[in-house]
Image (tube, one colour):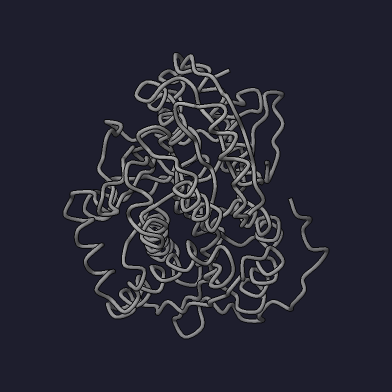
Length: 437
């Protein structure tokens, strides 16, 4: 078991490694793959954009599509990537897992895209990854998630459990009290995160006084708030997402709860949700993420100003998921340029792009959140967790941040499972499992 006491030793081992550069899959292709790779026709590179533009997930996913189009427009106006124009294939997944699966198949097999960017909830990632793996494509997943996965056709640019929950839980226990109440959306993200959170709450000598889950998109919280009042926790840990998160914030106020008595700590309530419902619904609550719009550095200031003043900046704010999407495209560009430099344009393939992504770094001058790196073993990101509190203006004031970037450890609380490496999950018995979850 990995505890806070041996975490430093565990990260040290991961750093040494880094120095060395639930849906069934389809039974067969639903479409015929293009006879000539579409990714290199007429010096164009096709990319899939797979986000919900309608439905209960659109409030959080559509702005990520917008920042993707912002990057594509900017890069094409400046000559493209390796001399090639980026051509987006936009799919509205309609907050529906069947539409996710149909969309990724179209992107890969009809359009011949080099890579796909998309998803927000873990259920959508898990819906498409068996298909991406089957067809040896490449998927960029750009938001926080729970970890406990080792897939060979994915690159993740957001934080996993040991890069958010690990720091947030003891911070809340130390600063707000030992008694916590967990409320989340009823699917793999919230339940797996809470397994981690319980471990670290226990390590902090804390107590879990209640735990509730609601269906994705649900707005029914009357019983939850009644139970919170009965249990009287010191703080609430929320793993609610999208519309459910917004309903929760609205009904929290209607139920008479206040952040001075029941502060919430979240991994998903961003500047975007708070702008949608009003800054008064966020004021005093806490978020843990590697990026806030308010980060005071030159790169972020340029990113925020250019995006919000562009035709794509209708969201009115930036937030962690949008910024992590932006990072994914910066990595993608660097990987393409490396493939072309070393092997030529005709060598561009999903597998080569991923291979050349191992260990890629974005500097302080490139990344709005500061220096980040793709781990060469598990293809998650090295980054710096930050904890902040919403102010009266709907922005986030930084309360705490790690001094250094930390390694992504997708199996931190499951060391018996093995170690994720580029070719699969290496089990303790010496065998290797591909596409492990």
